[in-house]
Length: 417
Ligand code: LLP
Image (cartoon, rainbow, N blue to C red; front, side, top):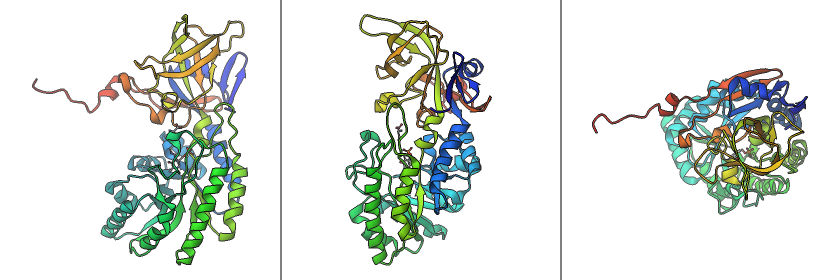
């Protein structure tokens, strides 16, 4: 993470001491850098240059209102996957006509709300969904702009849980069925075809699968042209990986240069849905060592953050860097497993890390800006951590720590028992 530096013996995010943040807001807490978000968004706009296109931030990666507000102010468009995300974008100042709606299971109510507001495009993932969308639009006397999400059957070489572009995955329409379904969609009076879409997976570190998928989509677009169906935009989804450890994801300008070269001759507008590459390395999870349990086989450091705060290590065997917030170079190091208080063996944040630790030390789990807080839960009746935004030497509480009252809100005791 670029915005992290060591000043004296302390870690800083931008110009703010992380130990100071821990003192002020407590731990565990999520901390984000405004500069890092801004820079990674600008990496996309710079790479796009004056080529016609839209950077639709994938809200699912981090949907805090203040983060969405920053991106909306920068001019970002948004990619959503639920009615809840739609309302978040509006609340944060995003415009409905800058929203595209992805996802394999949109409800009728979500379609109605999106049509009423006039979103830019629905990324439709099945024939059955198209039947429903067409009926909803007809009833409302509206036109629904659509892309079909095509499954190009390419291997993204990423973790199987976040790979989406293979035949065996639940996503999208098989590319071999696409011409037939587009031709049918073209006959539906309340459906307006505007694009072709794909998203082959997340945390891709190689450019080849993206370009293979693109080539397949271009063949499809040519076939559609022959059927007199004109496509205005091509949406390549999200998926560019970030550096957690020693990965070498493609640079965004290299990737987009190749894409633009391929699509420019057809005059296609480019739509992208990046999530992780905008916020992933803009955030960290601050935690404090509660107890040390050195042992014969293993040394465990029990910290106050757990799998309910960050499920990525448990779910995807994800590796995220872990750094002491105050560096003490005199202390002797040992190999530690960093575990949370939850009653599950899968509750760990990091394994086998060489660290000098003592009770009360604060640690920063880096690269936690994407799919961190948004995947947090209340498992073990643990309240979710606060979120803090750092801007230079200032910090802002952008989400409060949950209280016990928040946790039981909506639950009812029985009157007679
Ligand atoms: N568009 C669609 C249709 C998606 O399904 C996704 C992510 C994105 C865009 C954004 O992809 P990104 O640029 O962030 O790679 N929780 C997992 C990642 C799940 C990704 C789901 N879809 C993790 O923590 O690694």
